[in-house]
Figure 1 (cartoon, rainbow, N blue to C red):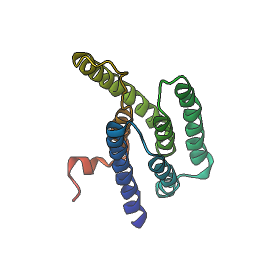
Figure 2: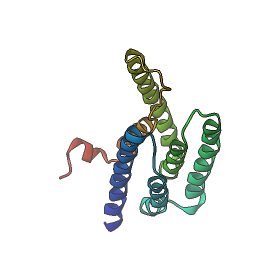
Figure 3: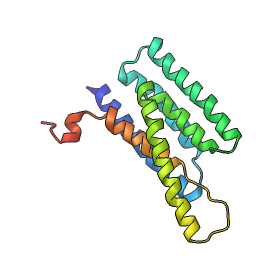
Length: 163
């Protein structure tokens, strides 16, 4: 019972961390290293409360995170993604099972595209000359929250039928 409470407490903490990451990215166009580190360091406790085996479950989480970091680092190198975004997605890959992580990437891409269009239109309408900086942490957080709601929250809780 305690592990169940801890499990859902960790999911709530992750959701709060994602909202915080989105807010700081909007405000400062930065996702702090301490936040990304806290998310990553919470993953092993989440694995334990989820009952994941070291092999192959945890190994697969690491493999996906390493693969995500490698691919996203290329996007960082060509200035298509910020470093905080790369670290946030890598940390999320440690939490979210591979199929759901792919779902996160798809939702993130769609919401990031919408965010870019809306901000680009606003930028154009305001006749601003400086380079437009998209707070992509918002799209990452939205995708992460979507995946948490769709894959990790019990249906009874979402429907309000707890009794």
